Amino acid sequence: MKRSTTTLLNVAAVALVGLFTAWAQASLDGYSVQILNLIAVNIILALSLNLIYGFTGLFSLGHAGFMAIGAYVCSILIMTAEQKEMLFILGDPAPWVLAAHAPFVVAVLAGGLVAALFGALIGLPLLKLGDDYLGIATLGFAEIVRVAATNMSSVTNGALGFKGIPAYANLWWNVAWCLVTLYVIVKLLGSNTGNVLKAIRDNEVAAKAMGVDVLRMKLLSFTVGSFFAGVGGALLASLLTTIDPKMFLFTLTFNVLMIVVTGGLGSLTGSVLAGVGITVLLEWLRVVENPVSFAGIEIAGIPGMRMVVFSLALIVIILFRREGLMGMREITWEGMARALRGKGVAK
Image (tube, rainbow, N blue to C red; front, side, top):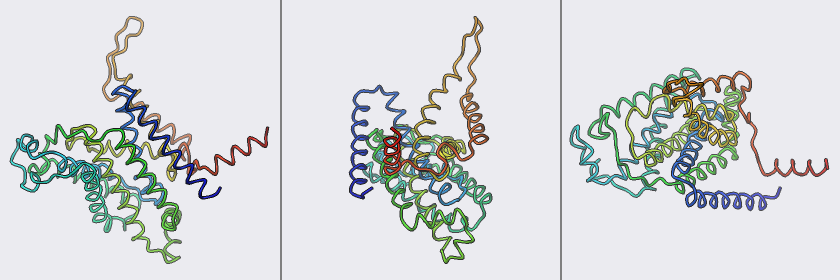
């Protein structure tokens, strides 16, 4: 397929997404719009983790830490000085926290950049570790961030966190950032750098023997993934309008990991499809936590039951379809054209 045709189809797809966003914003109720917002944020987080784990083979469990950094940085920048003075009841805010203020788009970028900086700083020593050790070390980093957020009262308001964060992250912002994330990662993976990252994932020793600077490439992937995790955290903070350290437990990383594994490690299409499916399913499964009346018998709801059901579903997927829904396959324009041509020939 010609490059100009592919570009035209990509522009048409983006226009369709824009039309759908406009329709959803104007026609759907608040609950449905909120689910669409969460879908967009979850896709950003899944794509960023898939870049690190699925395409580079780095088993990272620190996504919640990078999200926390992005969320706190963005919140500090978009709240006014008056809001901060009212929120910080455990002690006075640091002078630079009180003075910091920026437009929303700058705050989201700053959240992503600070998360990327931390990703580069911890990645330099940690990426020399093997798979399991890297997972444990990045999990430890996320826990350090959470404990620091709990205890740095003059910056994060301690365990109380932030409430009343300005709700700038509407559907337009979230969908736009989702498209930007997809575009950047597709371009990165489609370049020679992307081929090197996949080579490292498939056989690190062989890649090193071919003269690849493995640590530098791993660090690049880890830093880019951390940036978009920070962006996702920043959008989530403005979307929910409240954050606190308990929000950034390992469960948050586990949810993103579920999306990536279910969609398929090494498949961007899988991350997008699983991001949609799992976000909707998690909301739908709230039914199992509500009280149920059956044959005149009242059965009390069990809080957290949906996560139990969902974890069982994940176990089943891993047992019977270890490669996930898409494996390492992608849905492309060329593939769709070949499928249509094949169908035409069959007729």
